[in-house]
Length: 260
Image 1 (cartoon, rainbow, N blue to C red):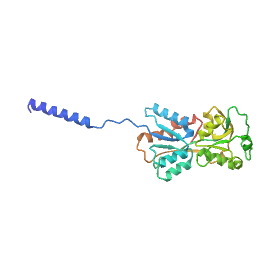
Image 2: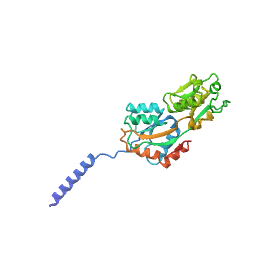
Image 3: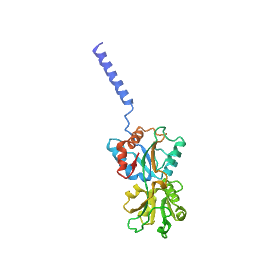
């Protein structure tokens, strides 16, 4: 091969290399997963997302609302990757429609139910069968998440029913779209009493716990997490695994949740 021919071949090879390099797809950066999480998880889930980001991952984008509203969003085709519900029935609902990734569902958190009052309130009430809850409300209303579907409200109605006081207060409710809406009513002094999760009461200095509802008065408060079937984001499964890991559960325990 002559020197000129060799130079031509080398030049042609370099040209092809440049063309193929420019045609090759650029490496795409990991995409942040979208998480639909129960309203009661606001502080803890944000802390988990921050811890995940500190490990070098894109920080998950989180939308908080009542589990019932989130389930309906998923059923309507909302573009999301992970669902974390405050109860099993709403996760069951989504799963029954084939909208969850098979094998991804894990129940990993537990909570308790409490009666709260504004911080400055002097109300005292022992949580027991037949307690004078209606009398304790005075002319006010009982703040509660919507008992027709929002988990905290459903648990609350179960507890009051089993304690024999539901009928005395069902006409004195201030239902909210989420447990945090009910919490806010009490914290602002707009309601004299409210039913929320223990972790909610812990997160708001504007309220104090009047009493704890017995675990036997309502169904177990269980939080499941699962991948949404339409998700194609590898980061979503990685973050789900982190949430149910020993390290992930430790984050939630710092905010008062019990873990499974």
